[in-house]
Amino acid sequence: MSRVAAEDTGLDSLTTFAPLRNRTFRSIWLATQVSSLGWLMQTVAISWLMATISTSDLMVALVQASSNLPAFILSVFAGVLADNFSRRRVMFAGRCVMVIASAMLTAVVALGFVNPWLILGFSFLIASGGALNDPAWQASVGDIVDRRDVPAAVTLLSVGFNTVRTVGPALGGIVVASFGLMAAFCVTTLTYMVPLGTIWRCKWKVRSSPLPRESMRTAIYDGLRFTAMSSEIKAAIARGTLFGLASIAILALLPLVVRDQLGGGPLAYGTLMAGFGTGAVFAGLSNGTFRRSLSQERLMRLSCVACAACSLSLALTSSIAVAAIALALGGAGWVTAWSGVGVSVQLASPRWVVGRTISIYYALIDGGIAAGSWVWGTVSQNYSLTWALEGSAAALLLVAAAGVLFPLRERNESEPDPLEEFDAPAVALNLKPRSGPIMVKVEYLIAEKNLEAFLDLMRERRHVHSRVGARNWTLQRNLQKPMQWTEIFHTPTWTDYLRLNHRLTTEDKQLDDSILQLHAGELPPLVTLLIERPTSSARKGERLVPFFPRH
Image 1 (cartoon, one colour):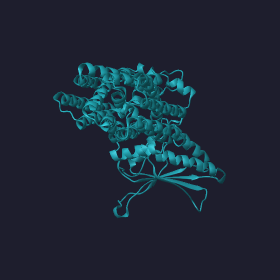
Image 2: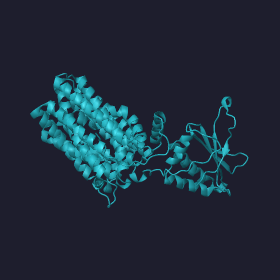
Image 3: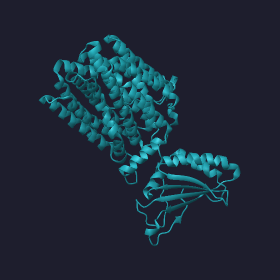
C-alpha cells in the first residue's frame, strides 16, 4: 500500500480532487481504497494474532518489518519493469500475487497451522505483491492524468489511504473481536480482488519509445546514476529513510502499548489506529494551505517534532484518550513528512526514469522502516517499551536537525519531462543497436573573454549529459590552438547514444543554445561520432565518420 503523500501545486486553478475527473484514475483510485481497507483490516488481524501467539516483543514489531522489507528488496527491479514494460500489466501481476498470498494465509489460519514465522512469511509475500504494484501505479499517474494534475493526483493517493485509515483499523478490530480472525482474512482477500478487476478493465495510453527496451543491468545502472546525480531526490530519500527509521516505532510498537500499558484489546487497537488516520487525513487535506505559508523544510521539521511528541506521549500515558490524541498528532506529522519527500521524488523524475526513482525511494525508505521496526523491537525486548518509544522521540528530533545536511528543496526546481524528439544522424556504417562503444567529440572555438562563462556552462553540461547516460565525460583544450576546446564522452552502445538524446529536456536544449552563443566559429561546433574497435578485431571497410547532426 502506498504510504507516500503529496501536496497540491499551489495554483488556484487546481484542487486536490481535480484528478478525479479522469475516469480511469477515478476507477483505479476507488478500487485501491477498497483494497487499502482490506489491507488495514489484515494488518490489525496479523498484528493481533502475532501478539496472542508470541510472547516476543521483537516478533510483534517484525510484523511491520515483514510488510516493508519486500519493497527494500524488490522495488528497484519493480521500477525497471515499470519503465520497460506495460505498467498496467505490472500492476496486474502485483495484484495477483497479493490475492494468491492472502488466500493462502486465510487457508493456513483456517487449518490451524499458525506460528510466528509462517505468519511473517505470508505477510512478506503479500507485501511483495504490493512492492511490484506500487512503483508501476505511482509511475502510471503521470500517464493517466495531465502533468499539471500529477501533484494533486499523488496527494489523492495518500488522502484516500489515510481516509480509509480512519475506519479500516477500527473496522478490523470490530471484525476480529466480533467474528474472529478468519472473517478478517476472508474479507481482506475479497477486497484485494477489486482492483484486480478494475485494472483488467481499464486501459490508458502510454507514450511509447521508438527505442528497444533496456537490459535489466543497464536500466538499474541508469536509474541509480540519475538518482545519485539529482540533489533534490538524494535529499528527499535521505530524510525519508531517516524519518522512517525513527518514526516507525509509533506503529510497530502500538500493539504492545495497547496490550501492556493500556490493557486494551483489538477494538482499542483499531480505535487508536483510527485516531492516527484521522490526523493524517486532516493534514493531507490541509497540505496546500500549510505549504503556502511554510517552506517544505520547515514543514518537515515540524512533522518530526509532532511525531516525537506522539512517541513520547505513548511512552508516558496509560489513558486511551490521551493516546488517541497523541496518535492524531503523530498521523498529521507522518503524512506531512511523506508529503514533501514523496512529491519531490515524483516531480524531479522525468517519465523515462520515474518508475526507477520511485522504486529506489521506496526501497530505501522501506529499508529504513524495516530496520527501525527491528531496532525498536529489540530495544523494547531487551530494555523496556518506554525506552524504545523515548529513543524514537529523540531520534526524530535528530532527523529534524538533519535538515542542515540534507535540506529539502522546493518543488519549483523539479526537472521537466524530456522532449523525446531527436533525429538519428546519418552514418556511413551499418550499425546495429548494440554496436559500440560510441565516442562523441564536439569541438568549440571559444574566445578568451568568454572562457569563464564557457567553463561554467560546460560544468552544467557535464552534469546534464552524465545524468542521462554519458560516461567518461571530459573537456580538453588544444595546446597549439588555445581557442579550440573539445568535449568528449562515451556511451556503451549506439542505442544508448540515441537514448541519451531522447532524454534531453527543453532546459537542456536551452543550455546547448547558451553554449552555442559563445562559439566563435563561422560554422556550428563540429560534432564527430566514432566507434571504438580493438586492433585485434578490426573490421574491413569500417571507418570513422565525422558528421553534423541535423537540427
